[in-house]
Structures are given as C-alpha cells and as structure tokens.
Length: 586
Image (cartoon, rainbow, N blue to C red; front, side):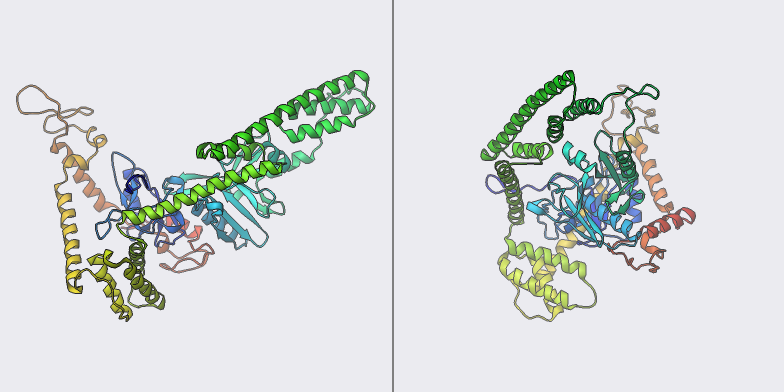
C-alpha cells in the first residue's frame, strides 16, 4: 500500500485453479487457446473451479474467460455486492499449482509400490506455499524444492529433490556423487512429473516417475545405477596394452597426484584442492625432478587457494553490506551465490552474515504478507470483520444443502459475531443472507442490518435482476467483429465486397475509392458464427473421470476414489479416456 492507501487489484492472468471446493488438492491447468478451452468447458460443464487455499488464493470461485486475440485464463466471479474483487494470490502462472501435481503423482507412484505417504506444504521462514513439498512414508522421506525460497539441507533425514532453478555447488555434487532434480512438463491440461539425476561432469538425465524406485540409498533412477557402477569400477590403464611403462610406485603415485591436482583446480573445488595438496605433502621416495614438479604445483595451488579465500571474503563482505544497507535485491542475489559457492566449512562470522541475510528476506516476506492482508481489508471498504463476513458466507454457500449440520451451525455463530464486528459495513444483501442463515440454524441473536429484512431481501433480488438484464443486453449488443477474431475471417472471401482471402474488406458504396474498412462486413462474419452453432450442437458429450467405475478401488460412478491423496486413481482417468476413444457419447 502506497500513498493515500489505495490498493490496486492484481491484474495478472490466473492459469491454474483447484476443482470442486476451496480446499481441494486436485489442480487444473486452463488451456491457453480458445479452441482447446471449448473442449475443456464441455468436459467440466458440471464442475466448479476455485482460487484454492493451497494455491495461496483467496478462496473465491473462478470462471473461465475465452479470448481469440490473447490467451484464455481463469477469472474471479463478480462480487455479489458490486465491490472490487481483490485477491492476494502471488503465483498465478502455469507452474503455480506444481506442488499439487507433485503430491498427486507421488501419491499414485508410492501407492503402486505398496506405500502410503503423508504430504505437507511447509512454509519455513515465511516461504510462499508451494515452494516445498514434504513426502514422508515408513521407510524414508523426500523434500521437493520447487524454487529457491528454502535452502536444501543435505544432512537432514529427508533427501532433497531440487527444482530446475535451484542451484547446487560442486562440492555437494562431488561429495554425494549425484543429486536428484524434478521438473514438470505441460501435457494438455495437466502437468507431468519427471525426475532428473545430475552428477559432476555429467549432463542431467531425465526419467518418468514410473522408471524410478525407492532403495536403501533413497530415490534411485537408471542413471544412479550407472553412476554407482562407474565409481566402483577401477579406472582404465593410462598405457596401451603391450606398452606398459614400468615406473616405481612413488613415481606413479606422484604423476597421478599431479594430474588429479590439475583436474580439481579446473573444477574449482577448494575442498578437493586442499585434500590433494595434503596427499602430496606426505608423499616420499620420488625422484628429484618429480619432487620439483610437485613443489611447484603445490605452490601454484596455494596461490590459487589464497585467491579463492579472498574472493570468498569479498563475497561475504558484499552480502553483509547489502544487508546493512537494506538492498533486498542484492541480498537475494548474493545469498543464492553464497549458498551455491560457500555452503561448507563456514566460520561463525560467515554463518552470522548468512543468518542476517535470511532473516532480512524472511522479515520482508512477512511484511509483504501482512500488507496484502491489510490492503485487502482497505480495498473491500471494511475491516477484518467485514472480510470475515464475506469469507464465511462464501463457505456456507458452498456447504449449502437440505440438512443443517452441527459444523454449519457453528459456522453461522461465527458469522453472527463477525457481522457484529463489521457493524454498519454489512450490506443489505449480506444482512438478508445472514438473517436467512440465522433462521435456518435456529439462532436468535440480533444481526446488524441496513434496513428491514424484507427491504434487504427485495433490494438484493432487484440487484440480481439488474445484473442479469445488463449481462443479457451486453451479449445481445456485442458487435459481430468482437465475436470473430481476424485470424478466422481473413481466411475467407467476403461475399459482399468480394475481398479475397488475406485482404481486408473495402467500402462498396460505388464511389470507386476502394477505401479499406477498419472492420469486416457482417456478411463475412455471419457464416462463421453459424458454423460454430452447428458444431456446438454436434459436439459429443464425453465421459468424465467420475462417470466410470474405478478399476483400482472399484468405487462406482459418482463416488470418489479411496485414494490416500484424496484424488482419483490414474487408472480411472485412463479408463474414462479409453471409453471415450472407443464409444463417444452424445
């Protein structure tokens, strides 16, 4: 919030949602193209979409927006009271639900191996929800880092799995032999998980999750087996067969150490350079010429180590200055560099600098979160009480049914207290709805109202009719040129002015000027709209996942799967797709 306290709504496009309810863990990715969105809407015609809590969203219901001149996206339903819609959700792009896709894929993968896992989305030091996914089962655990918000802990009980943007230093790669990475690829309206294995001096190899296994060493891929075999296999001889050079053992050892020192210098590993220099220092029994080579190599390595020490000292000094000067961008960049290049053998002073930098970023994140909450309250024209009224009413609407449960009655009690806190900020429409819930719950506590109950209900009904009339009028008066994108009509000949394909329409007023029109003739657009209507009528109704019996848990159509993740089994979705391919339904 800046200046006089005016908060602007976040205009970034929302590409992901959750299905069915606000606390759902079933993610959805919206198609970007209009032609794909038509099929998506048909497939989910009986479903609801939500700005889910596990996406860091506001809990509001979403609808789909179709465009032919830009990408399609989700959007919030209009506020019933006409207030501006404000959502504090930070991640809105294609990857914003990746943590839910990881959870779903991992649950299915472990279930297929006879394991039941617990999943959590922790937020250490104020990290955004979804940065980390914790997976725990009886024999082990994984911590998936999807971004750089949380530093991996390599000596913890859970094995880190890094997103493609998370850095790892050379020493860690060498010490651990390999690390695992995760990436998600878009396939239609889903995201597919792939696991990569990265080793030093090797490119990352990627595998489908079904190609991976859990072993005593932890997560394993086909690449891991090759890396382990390579490390256990003795190195090949340096000399061709039949030309073995007979050298005394100390001499051969000295030559190997010289070559190894040159290799680790190129790697830039301070730890390994120190280790090789220590091995050279205790080597005895070499010839004088070789000893001179060893001494020169160690002296050169020591100068290099001094340069690295100075560079490390300068890096920590710049990080400390950035923290003291409150330069957040530099703090974030330098801290990532420090974690990648100097994660081991830190001094107390270096650890203090790193802790101060991490604390600065955590405090900033907490401040931004608090500012977003305060901003939403200001933009809604109310305090915390009114915001709670809106959220609770939305929750009750989603739970509405024929039976008033004990949980809903408790929620109505909370609603009445929140309404009392909001006072005269409760609108007439809200007051009418609160009074209705109060009556259904059998509660007689007074509710702040703007006017009588009858007047409030009448005003709310009139506003609804006005909105419906305005929406219908807008749809009827929308120009044809706004309903058909240029890329569709430009490929057709105009029956009125006879403009050929690829040419704009021209005025046909017999003046002979041939002036180009800014919009095409309606005769060029109407056939396209008619064809769309015919295709919409001919479009076949396909089976949804819940329309079929689950081959895995045998749950009947309409019933949710007995899945540890709360979602549907993959075999059920594949079965529905197979039936649609064989027997399309109208």
